[in-house]
Image 1: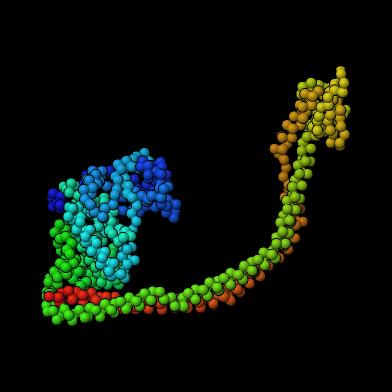
Image 2 (image 1 turned 120 degrees about the vertical axis):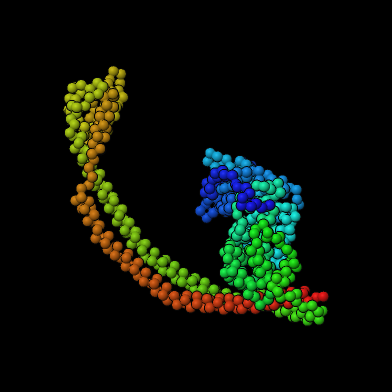
Length: 604
């Protein structure tokens, strides 16, 4: 169903959906963002950057997930869509449930299937379908004319099945058509699909521009949406089955099969249409003219895809070239020519298979390259091992010199700080010590025993009483090694004396001195000359190793260049041979196609 410019329904404002990057962040943790148990247990396929890999389309970003049990699913996360997206998918699901068709792909629309940020958004869950996208399949079977013809027949049957059900896919293009391992066609991406129960609603997309009529708009929506795209795909497949070299000449596979949007916008200046119509045989020209004539029609007048037997005679009649041979004798003659042409094609196919397998001298040259690289690597490793052995002793001497410098510096710093600490402690006379049971008599006893400043307080211990009625003795080790044994200092006082000394030490440590520049220089001066001699010896050995490495590389560089040039020349020779056979095979297949066409036309 189509609408005029004045009556076509206009889409209502669409809700705001997350972008692909937001979905990527969410799907790093499927168990937190997905409500479906199967999907929540899965893990998304990752890109080289470690993020979930997204395939972006018109309406959705598509992610693949693998469950722990090996099942794989595809999740379509919408980045835009009509306001009635759920209603449309419900209608599509109901319509597809009523038909039996091998092209269908099962799906489940989940209105709140994914959480992104604070919101929940719809998604479509689909089982993973094994197979190749249409362009990939065509490229892999480019030289198999029978496979491409069979593909065209299956595509025509698929389109006829859609039309008979009143359904239009809405975006027929290479990315939405899969060829499974059995050669059957499967359709994916039902975002723009039309089913009869959606009649009267506006469309939501224009489809891939390399497959759509230039007059199609977002509002167009009806059972005839696929007509033009079907002609483009069918014509391209038939053309490639007759001349596979068109794939390279027209850059096939670059977001198209053979034709692009600019060919449809201005067919008179289209290099692709000119290439298809400038053929020695009439078959491709007829196909091209038939397709080009559709561009003069409004979208809703583009007819459905016809059968091949209807297409070619109609094209010839419009071209004014008649209906071809009319007598049985002509059919016999053409039949003999067909047999000869088929034999020529078979022979060229055999030659192409041989040419494709023929590697010439390339394997031997690659082995020689590998041997030369191994020889170079072995020589360089031997040099590196010799260098390492030569440097071991010198490097160890360098390290030992550094260790000696560090030890000397540490000892000098230790002595400096010890003297500084003693000087600081000597500034605090014992008379400033106070604690439990400490009296002037205690100060006097400590002074008589030789403990005159905090610096004289060494290790302090308490001896238990030697008998009943005898006091405990406090033992203080003096700096000269003597011991002061005092009964006038109680155990509590002894502990307080130790704490007093520690408190003074902690204060002094805060301003501990560092080695002066002169002292640092004195320490370094002992090893500077030795270090210089070691550095010079090490650099001399390394410089000799670098010179030797450059000599080895230069010595083998000519061999590398000669082998690379020889391999390149051999590859070019093999490629030229393969191209020569390809051109001959393409010419022979075109001639065969023309003869077979004449043969069919000549039969009474």
